[in-house]
Length: 99
Image (cartoon, rainbow, N blue to C red; front, side, top):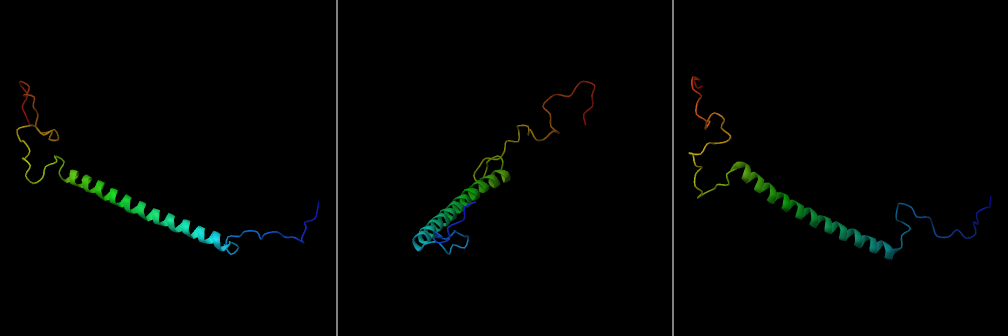
């Protein structure tokens, strides 16, 4: 096996501390990090606003599924309520007593 030439070690091996980074690269890297952080904060704001709007609509629809509000006509009580299974539109069968 050939031996390593120790007379010219070359550039230092990079490590995770960042101590070997030149100042120009470090500045560029910091700028990129700041830009990404800024974009991420903007994305989080946008997502929060979208969530807030969607949740408000969902909550409003859940509280008032008919879409009514102030100034809306009341629900027409002459129509059967499909959720109320105690009312049926079919006439009683002959010879069968109702509930």
